[in-house]
Length: 168
Image (cartoon, rainbow, N blue to C red; front, side, top):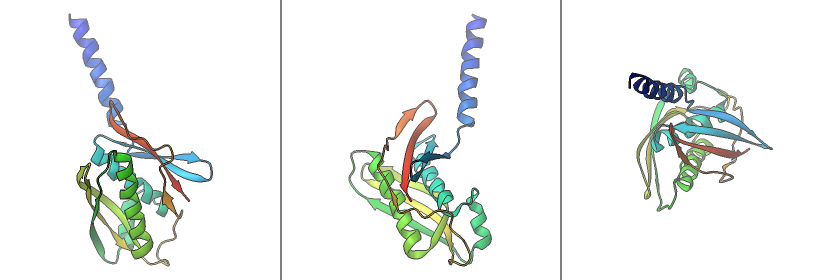
């Protein structure tokens, strides 16, 4: 009986240790493009981590808080994507594409993300960042588009994960 309890508790501890070591995202190689393997304990966290990873690719800054040293005026934008969807993959691409559009149009580089609402009718998220001129920050990689190539959000024992490929 005691041995059975010990085995169950050690299995739970192993799962806890694995979960605590889960990286929010990591770069993956892809022919002529670049991608991310993204993880999150919840779907909201997965969407937030995907955005963080995309901005790491764009800026080359592994710690996006470094953008604050370049900050002239801190900005917070509420980004809302309203769209009836059958799956969250489409919504993830739309969320990241909207953030990418803002970068290209307004030159705002985000370093903080909070998904407020996420369901089949859309996403509402807040993004914090800085408006930075081209002389102040040399971009690492220009992302042209977020793709659907091989995109599938999967639920696992640690939460959710997916791989996202960006056209560069």
